[in-house]
Image 1 (cartoon, rainbow, N blue to C red):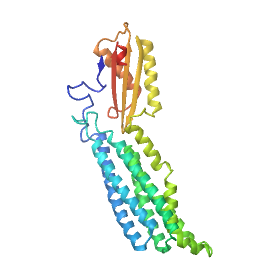
Image 2 (tube, one colour):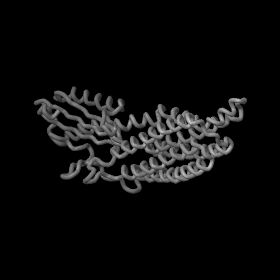
Image 3 (tube, rainbow, N blue to C red):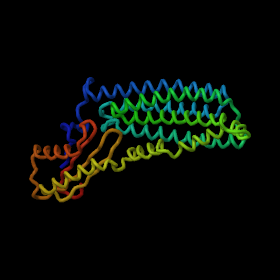
Image 4 (tube, rainbow, N blue to C red):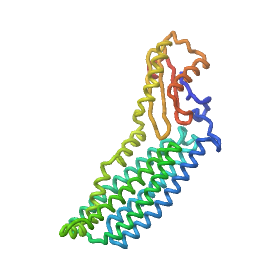
Length: 332
């Protein structure tokens, strides 16, 4: 006997889900704030991308051009985050009957993969620059530009990190991490070129000749193994592939409640499937019941669902609970 998700009756066409929140609901207000924050990030990133490419070409600096390329990739990433934020806020429809939660980890994975590609590209580009004799540039203008770039990136990072905590948005956290990378890149580049003013000769002249190419390679290599973006890619690919949820607390609560339920009722065995996709936890339980199972009425089974839902302790718009009761072992 199959059971519909805990929220509401099941229609003939779509799985049961809570009715969409009203426009003034906290969830919708958070979604609008999330989208507005991503829009601001998009415009600021566009400004920095154009500025970095222009200044990099003017100063003939590979490291600033790389920063511009990174900004362009981040610009595309911010656009994808904004698109995902709008899609995730939509309710389930006939085409996407489980909603749009899967869009979020997919976008996160694409963005993380693009960052990895830029890191690899930058590293080999920097090595090639060193191999061909370096690239002497004006350190003063590069330092001044990167100080300004650091200030803008720092403000954007602080703003997005604050909004991410306020609305509890993983999309904003990931976009804020990209601003953190941009800030670290600019700050480290500033420090790298500042060495020109403290190194003695002949090391000053050598560093001045190779600093631009060396900083491209070093910064790309440093950002390649850090948790951002490797950790983001690993975490979101797990969700895209619908692997077991890493939320051990949630899994433990559900299993503890199932042990108590099995002690009270004639349940021979059960299997659970708990995955997290974007903002939604999908919880599926298959219960093999024995001949003495007493919860035959719908009202009694609803109480059983309510117990498991309470144990999961998830907001109704952040979880999908399905329970199948059967006396046939084939369905478990």
